[in-house]
Image 1: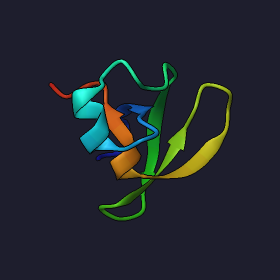
Image 2: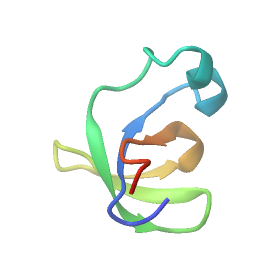
Image 3: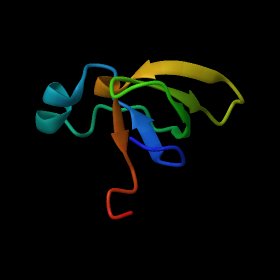
Length: 64
């Protein structure tokens, strides 16, 4: 993931999401900072900044 990527949360992880794409959080956040390949800071629409593992996020803008 890169700073500026638009993401949505997939609470049960990427493996589960592949078979159940309807089960996801509908809010879209933006990656504010990359800690390492597994952790990022995400800014959500309500103004919260949360450290999140990449395995629980999916990019909205894959074509970027």
